[in-house]
Image: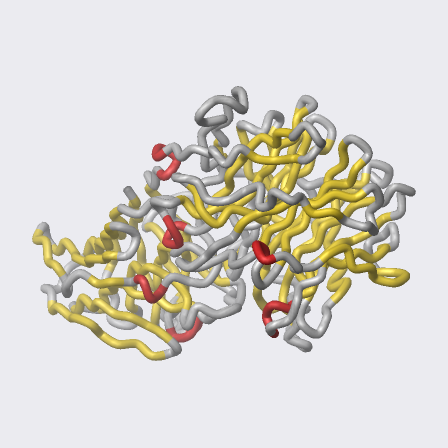
Length: 511
């Protein structure tokens, strides 16, 4: 048996980008990073651009993509390909890439929750290049209310600083953006921390976060987000501030927010600005108004324009290209596991691939869901099929995986269809409790095709084909309540049973 360790040799994400004038109705097609890619970061190193995004609770953690033109992207690495660092347990958010040209090293800041203190912490890892192995250096700061959303920059004198948000909104408090000097090895904060600004204007609501710094015209500019990032009720927006010196005083633009909802995208924010051919571009996340929270926060790219008095603004005219929601996918597992598959960061998954397909070791982990092998969705309407070999000991199934209670680091929950022996079962598992919604007895068969169909992102029907006969299992189910906080749905293969048993999948198809 093999432990899943996905290498980054494999697949490509294509970013569609044709830069036309600000006056055009649509500057370019979006999303540039389709699917659930929150809190995107991008940095330029030589002739290449590198990007990453939040992983939440799904390993491998923090993908790294590479491009020569901000158009065509290839997945080349993960910051933590084997799973979580020893000190961290969940909430793997907001990676921020920074390159030190003098050291010729890449640094990756990220947020995670400490196992011992249970605090959200800002941590950092480093590598000789974005495509080599990263070494984790652990947390830099973990305040009582939590510390998140790091960003590295140098001040006007060349001194190195880390910026972050104090997560006061989690306790009903304000959310200062702090800056503190860090040593050149990025292993320790030094000196005193300095507050740059906080949420003190009505439009900002309960928080400011996701700060990113760039420089032009003798100013430091900070893009930052405000209000609520996630869930159906989100109202996220983005503002900008500027200062002649890093530590301030900072002036907020009096026409904020500069990025807000349009007909295609809502709740836009938490991005990074990068320069290309003399222009600045912002890569940020947003919910598509069509896909909403069921798909997740997708990567959107927009060109920065400038006011006559030197403020960076955005056109708020990002379009939506439906073809980027394609879910065409087939895997027969004959050679290896496709790198698109993910697993719960807390689980050590065992599997075999080969001519017979995938044999996935069963368990009752993941809050009694069992072993999960998942991928994200890009669409609201899709069919998810798996051909399985029934077994008396392990239940093999398909499921929509979300979260229980929609909270921080919430345990997984899901609804799906499984086959065990001669029983088809439509089930739901939440908070370690499974209820059987419907069951169907079938003839003994060498293989069964399970089918999960989704409409409008949340209306799920389940069926099976046994010996050429179609069998519907249960009625249409509403899965809105399973939408996880801060994530889109995952489509999962499920293996539930004792660890001495295996679920056998011959082929999976999504369309």
